[in-house]
Structures are given as structure tokens and as C-alpha cells.
Image 1 (cartoon, one colour):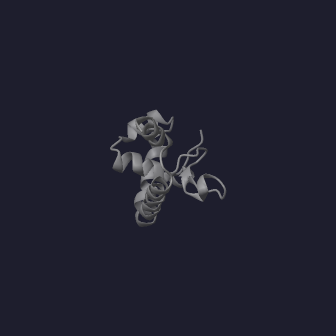
Image 2 (image 1 turned 90 degrees about the horizontal axis):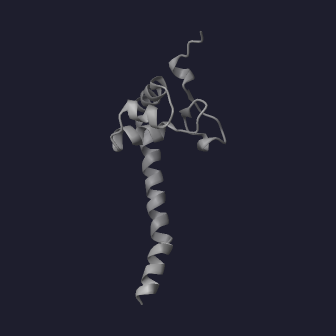
Image 3 (image 1 turned 90 degrees about the vertical axis):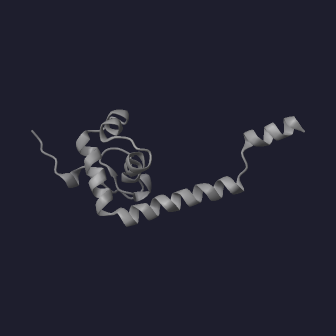
Length: 103
């Protein structure tokens, strides 16, 4: 039987998921877990079940998040700011087509 320690659940690999900390063997980042749990209100069980992770994986990601919260929160905010800027500068094609049809 192999026993995995907490630090074996999280890995950072340059070139994978932008080098962000993630669940070992997955492309699911600690950031993803934090957003799903803290901001979307998903339980640990829901996340594990939905994304085929172990409870230990999810708990390890949350532990990592709480140990590095300021840095990860800054990354989440930067991602949200980037998405908002992109939305402002790249109009929705669906909205454009609807406006064209109404004209």
C-alpha cells in the first residue's frame, strides 16, 4: 500500500496549467478548487464527485489555498480582470447578430 502525504497531492509543473499549483496528475488547479468551494459554494464531496478526485485531493488543494491565499486570490482577481477587459473589447457575436436582425 502506498501512502501519499499532503504535499504529494499538489504539484507545479512549468508549462502545465500555466505553472500554477494543481492536483497531481490533473489539470485542475488549486485556484479552480478555491473558486468552486469558496465562491460557488460547492462542497468538498461535490467537487470530488464532479471532477473524479479523491477527498484527500480536494482537502489538500484547500489546505494549499489557505496557506497561499493572498497570492492565489490575486491570481483569481487578475484572471477576472482579464476576462472583463476581454469582454469589453471583444463584442459578443451573438449580440451583434441579434442587433443586425433587429435593424
